[in-house]
Length: 453
Image (tube, rainbow, N blue to C red; front, side, top):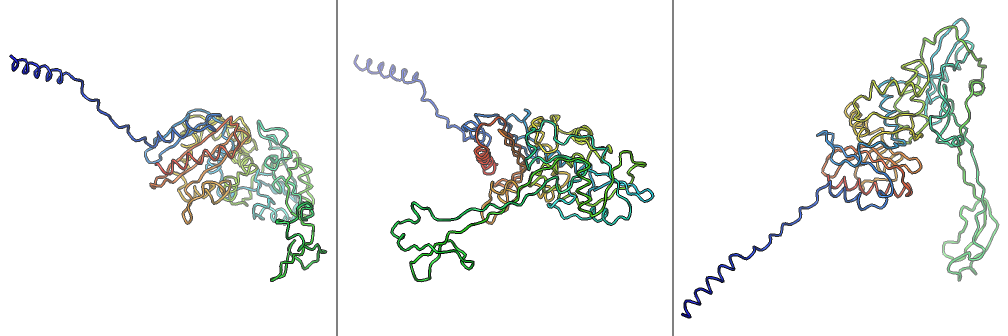
């Protein structure tokens, strides 16, 4: 009997053991992919959380988006607008830009501007237009009735009239439409009266002497002595301050006459069309400066030059209207475009449209020429202090910056550690953090892109 009970007990135990729930299988979490890590970088950022951010990362080989954060939404682009101005200029304007249009009748040379900003601009070495006007043996008659624009772009702040970044647009810019004041700030360089030296012990070894022309340093001593001579002196810091001037026809003619050393007359109704053109300025230096130094005057004047080339008038709005349908039809989102430089907040572009435009620039004009037009990280232009490559390595990021108050953008090309070339557009609007704080966060994300892709 006991044996039977024992067998039954064993059978029951085996049955209960067979009904026991199996041990749960622990499946390890998969390692986060590159897109997960980029998403986490945005989610963890207090800077991005306080404003509006769009980021579109595009692979030009597969023609697909690798990461898309609000890429379809419209943002204020600031100077990323200049990418659009560059592409329009490349499509419309010749490699050597027209400097003026003119007609010769009897003893008079009638001329008008094309909007070219290089004339007597100290940033450019271009003398052809100057020599053409100076050496003419005819009376010089100037016309500006084809200028249909306003001095300021649509939506610019009125109180920028003294700002060096916002010179007025004009039919015939001269000296960059800027007055340059050479200033000297004279200050007295001397030691602190309360604590001139540290440690104070050496104060008894310090002699104050009169300055002489042979002495170079504020403090000096003999080679083998701890006896210091101190001579307070004035030091001069020189700088150039640039202030825009107001364009009007009489002032322009007065400046030009003074420069050429000959009289200029005005004409309201020229007797013939301006059927001849003087081509006097290589386009590439203007494009390079507009993109690398973010020169606003060049951007605005290039739009006027496009208008002149297509319509015979100088009008930013006519230029934009003419080129959007003809040259930007491939963009996924139609741009809301109002000026050439990006100084206005009326401009609205999407990150994915900017990325697609950057891809088109690369395809049509090639790697070497396209990259040469953009600031290079750690090396040139507005990116000389950012995205510095490792010692001895070439730049890995080429991009156009953009800054308006509370708006910081960056769009361009990035070369990753694995050898990929990617395109990105990074747009931040309504930011309350400082511009450099936002730029630092952008650099953190883009360095992740460089490492992960």
